[in-house]
Image (cartoon, rainbow, N blue to C red; front, top):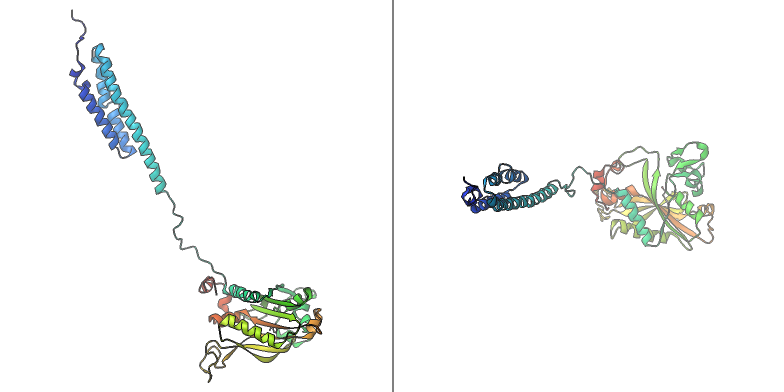
Amino acid sequence: MSGPNTSYDPVRVAALSAEEVERMRAAGVAAVQGAGSLEELKAVRLAHAGDRSPLALANREIGALPPQARKEAGMRVGRARSEIATAIARRDEELQTEQERRMLLDETVDVTLPFDRDPRGARHPLTVLQERIAEFFVGMGWEVAEGPEVEAEWLNFDALNIGSDHPARTMMDTFFVDPPSARTVLRTHTSPVQARTMLTQPPPIYVVCPGRTFRTDELDATHSPVFHQVEGLAIDKGIGMSQLKGTLDHFATAMFGAGITTRFRPSYFPFTEPSAEVDLVCFVCRGAEPAVDSCRTCKGEGWIEWGGCGVVNPRVLVACGVDPAVYSGFAFGMGIERTLMFRNGVHDMRDMVEGDVRFALAFGSEV
Ligand code: PHE
């Protein structure tokens, strides 16, 4: 009777020989490391760690070995399988991390890309010019004063020596605000700010008031029912025409450049006496002598009209509570649209009114 085959040598079972197990282990580990994606690793797992992998099949042969040989063969196969399992786990982690990193890169939204349908805005050149003018006067120690656009008729007219039967009232093309009994108007000029300032603060007064004004004009190349003026008022002891002239010459140079001075032409405003129209040296032909007839800016005059000015009428001082025996003053008023037209070669009022950003953009954010 023959006993169990105690001398069975596992080396002789080809699949369980140390070299063969080592070859299968090395092939498995190499395949795992060679897996370039989770997809590939899945195939490698099936081929080298699955139920039908060479090591799994070899494992099945162990049962056929004699008992004393099983332990060693089992340990050998088990070690090889666990090494492959460890390699798979490590590679799986690496590939997962890599996939996440790639996903983050792929899905990154570059918020710095230029977006050409987002239109750029620009400050309106009239606003910038108003600020420039205000800054010029603030630089000389003046203050900026403000007043309402819906104004009391008394301040817009009466306080400025424009009585209810004064022809200047009809010349001013006024918008009256309902109801008529409220006696309010859309201010026709910034001059009511003169009156408001004198009524609220004692002299000396040096204020400049840029702001919106209204007259019943049709919108065309040179008129707009809504426009802007800048009013200046100085009230102090010993103020007269010479200080007014010096101030406006300095203002003109600041706005239009060196050499652009002013000239006064006698005129009439109810709130100033004497009154004058202010002209600027034409900054295109610079008033060349003999006159350049072809100059389109001044039409050969050498001068262009800029605004009105004068010494404050004592009747206005009295109406606003300032003692004309002690104080005197000057006032001036210019159109800001007109100033922008001269200064920057704007030819049509409507360009300034329509609010097309392309017009404003041409000035950049500065004037
Ligand atoms: N307020 C005047 C106008 O609108 C301008 C002006 C202001 C004239 C101050 C003289 C003094 O026409």
